[in-house]
Image (cartoon, rainbow, N blue to C red; front, side, top):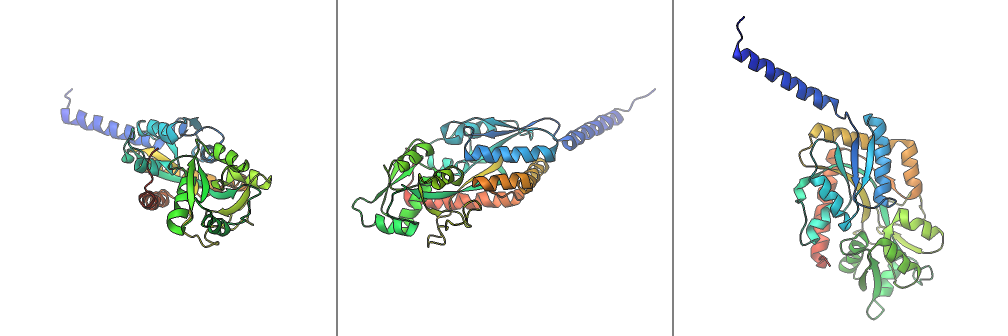
Length: 322
């Protein structure tokens, strides 16, 4: 019997193509990991767990949470950036995935090493004051700050944190007389507010709402484009005449560069479906989180717009790493 080398080559090539195609079609064939770059229990973690719960049902494989806190979210992001782009490791991203490269002197990975996949949800920031503050809304707060020598103290969770961006927008866009006071965490700045040590801060709705309804903080404004489902009586910054203060605590999904486009599209579709599941959506809204979802393209656009917007704030305020 004679063998044709060209025939053998074609047969082997065909089998490899078939195997590669079958592998691609089989995704996912094992558990998928969502790396949360913050500690368990925070807004980012809670949004990640909601997305994982729903995506598990859609994809037919467990989507597990792996908390890797540290360095303001950089530790977990670096882990994902250096992971194999096989579609089984994703980052639960936040605004820091954009702003850290603009603020920090050095980063362990390049900005292009991770790419946007899906928007999960967002927790609007609520600007809060001590419960006995004489000002009752954001307009009164800004006006009062201009009349006090040295201005008001505005607590943040450190350089580049969400309350830091809120403070800088109030200063550069609306002339508020503020002294930024950086704390190590949002919990510390919240404690400072409740103790009357500072005049205001901003914090994710999921964190601040229980303290507001419990009388430990006074809500001045909410920083999203729409009123909170869980607290509709609180007006937005735009309604009070501060349209540029649109800063939220969002959570999305990023992937290591190189993950196949069809895999990322399936992840985006699974997260979108999760945010539309009534049991998940209602639970998030009750806690002060707004489910978003959407397509991969819509999240790519959102990240690009956020990058341009945050870059402008950083430049105008001279924001730099501590």
